[in-house]
Amino acid sequence: MAKQQQEVYFVFMNFDPVYERLRADRSKEGSATLDAYLSQKHDKLLAKLLQPDSYRKRSSLAIVDGFAVEITEDQASVLRSAKEVRVVDKNQELA
Image (cartoon, rainbow, N blue to C red; front, side, top):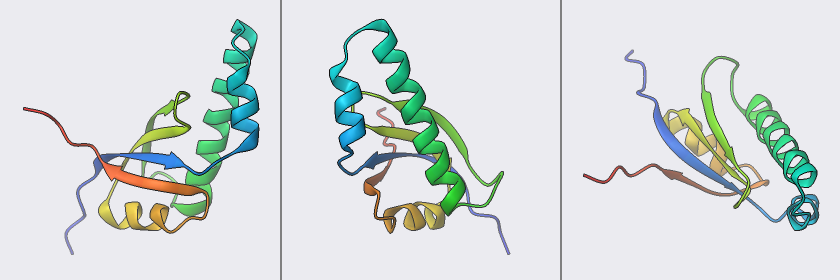
């Protein structure tokens, strides 16, 4: 059986009141706290739903509570079914 190709997907999360509160703090410390919170939140979601070493998170996106991750189409379907996730969309490279 051929291994599915991994591609970059963007995952956007559902409303999170903690994220909204942290995002409102525009200080340097507030920004660092938000970044740490989101990175941990996104890492936990991936660890809960996907097999270890089967994906590579590229970055967390603080402005939209989302992240970029290298996964297969099957893994994208798993993430789409999670209650915490609003949208999973494959990266579309522009020529």
